[in-house]
Every structure is written in C-alpha cells, then in structure tokens.
Image (cartoon, rainbow, N blue to C red; front, side, top):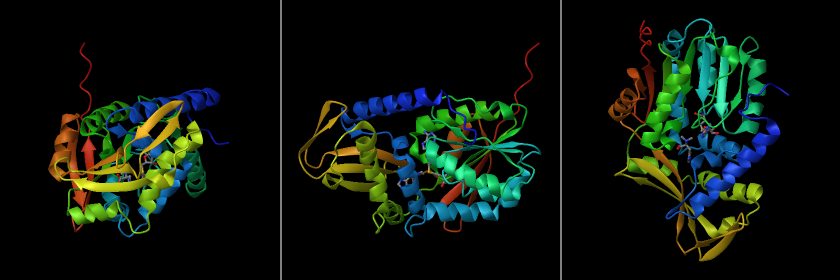
Length: 330
Ligand code: SAH
Ligand code: AVI
C-alpha cells in the first residue's frame, strides 16, 4: 500500500472521522434551518459523481479553467522554483495538476491534500506511473483543520495550487482564514495559484447546477445516501428533491434538499422531523468578481500578482504571492 500521511493512526482515525461525521450531521439536522457541511459530499461515491459533473455540458467551470491553465502553463512554470514541492488543496482527480506537472519539470514533489482518502489513493497510484521522477506524498486530511505537511518537503520551496473554485464552497470569512492558513503552510516568498468562479449571467449559473442528466441531483442526494451507509439512517432518497438556485444578494449558488412530504427519519437515535417542503441547505458556491477576490486575498496577507480569465469571463485563475518574512528582530 502506498504511503499515505494521516493525522492519526488508521483504526483510530476511521472511528474519529465517523464520530465527527455523526456529530456534524446531528448538529446540522437539528439546527434551524437544517444544514449539512459540503465537505461530506466527498466519499468515494461522491468523488466519482463530482468527476461526472465536470464532464457535463452545463458545468462550464472545469473546461474553462483547463483552458486558462493551458494558455498560461508557461507563466505558471515560471513561478515554480527548482526542486519545489507543489501542494494542492482538494486535489480530486488531479486532472488540472497534470498541466502544471507537465510544464514545470523542475518540481521535486507533489503533495495532494484531499478529504476523500480512498479516491485520493486511487488517483495518486495512476499519477505515480505517469511521473516516476516526482515524489508523491498524498495527505488525506480536512484542509479546513490545521495539518502538517509531510516531513519530506521540510527543506523544499513550496508552491500552492487550489483549482476548481473549491474556495467558493467556503463562507467568505472561512475562505479568508483558509488563505491565511495556506500562507503559514507555504511560507514567506511563496506563490499560490487559485481558481475562482466569476459572477455571470444567472441562467448560465443556474443551468450549471441543474443539469439535464440529473448528475448534480445525484451528487447532492449522495449526502443522504452516505448518512444511510455510514450512520445507519434510512433516508428515502426519492422523498427529497434537489434544489439549486443563484442567490444574487449573496453572489452564491445555494444547493438544498427539499422534503417532498412530512416525514420523520431516525439518525443516530435522534428523531429528525421534516415539514413538507422543508430543506436541508447542503452547499454554497460563492462567485466573485476579479476585484472582490483580490480584496479578500489582500485581507489574508497575499499580494495579487495576476488574474487570468477566459474570453467570456466565466472563470478566473489568480496568482497570489506572499511577501518574504521580515528578518527576525535581534
Ligand atoms: N481540484 C479538483 C476537484 C475539485 S472538487 C478540480 O478542480 O476539479 C473539490 C475537492 O476538494 C474534492 O476532491 C473534495 O474531496 C475536496 N475537498 C472538499 N472539502 C475538503 C476539505 N475540507 N478538506 C480536504 N479536501 C476537501
Ligand atoms: C467543488 N466545487 C467547487 C463545486 C462547485 O461548483 O461549487 C461543487 C459542485 N456542487 C455542485 N456542482 C458542483
């Protein structure tokens, strides 16, 4: 089995992860309005469903960002020092990473960080044979919690990669603290390349989260399927509907699961009652303007160096730099 850094020994971490999932699920389902954290979408089934979303005709972000990264591959390579480690947050299938790895042959190590442990290992197995000279150091961790990068990169310069607009799934204040945490992990003088979805025509946004094939609906409902699988609940998936819409005031897509009828579901021994039409708020996907994202990055201590977009201005890739740390006072 390939090396996989975990924050706790395997047996303990499995039960600790399930306990945290149970606690967050109960807290969210007993709150008003009901909610569930979007990071729980990503078990092995959820990661596979997300991959299917990326190929949907309505879901423009993935192919648009790939276009931008391909166009600027040389600019990206120029940001990467010799012998550097590329740390990617929420690496998923590492599809976009290949653009960076192909352009920046000077990289010494790749550190994909993802909460979806099983999917992460599968993907990295494939990458190892494609890039045999690169040290692969997968980290199965929740990037919203403090975590230590692998010791093997202690002496390496670091570059951060956070594509996909996964930053949009964080509340803006969480995104700001996350950018600060990334700064602590990467260190002074480093660069961060981050993909950010842009505010645009409402129909384009709504279509992207309401695909005709129903894959986004299945991705949303996988959260209930996962609660059934891992916490022994009995949600009837047919009794919930996928709702996704753009909230213009908050500049975000909201995803909800709406109860089609009055119902009661037992979760971890707790009775959870639903009114007809009552929803569980499962995800926000914030959209930014080039300026609003740059302002947030500055607020988190980063200096925006560049922002690249596509012809339609649907998506953006920002390059942020962290100033060198001032010399320690004598
Ligand atoms: N970067 C890829 C995948 C984006 S999907 C792309 O651009 O296509 C979001 C990814 O982030 C998933 O792989 C998911 O498992 C991971 N993820 C979501 N929340 C996370 C968290 N809190 N900690 C670590 N990984 C997380
Ligand atoms: C991973 N993340 C940026 C996706 C998004 O667009 O917010 C997750 C997603 N939710 C529904 N479709 C895709």
